[in-house]
Image (cartoon, rainbow, N blue to C red):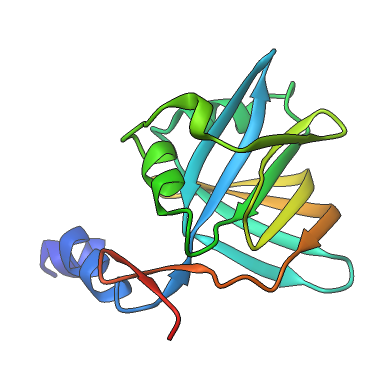
Length: 162
């Protein structure tokens, strides 16, 4: 058995292959005491309609992982970005712009990103270790949406519908 067989395909090849799957772009949000925190994530999926469940995948090295893994944080937000919000994806992916350019709004004390295609407030239901990431299963307590066009991510670049 080769090392590739025991560990699967190499990470670069895996990333390049999965980059061929177009996805939306989300910002996962939570509070760290009084501070609002956010992280760009495209690993987001609907799990169940009844009950309403979603799943987000967070790198174990991310600050958001430490925040969501603790017992203090019981709820988190998911904001689906619109095609006009590329700068926010960059901001929360480690290339920050001015903090005052973030259109924060709160729903019952939880920070969300305004101007997006959709926003969800989720109660943390389950934390599932999964390799170098952790999966957070959320029960959706609140949702709102618009008919704006989403920001898409495909082959390592942003795209828009049409």
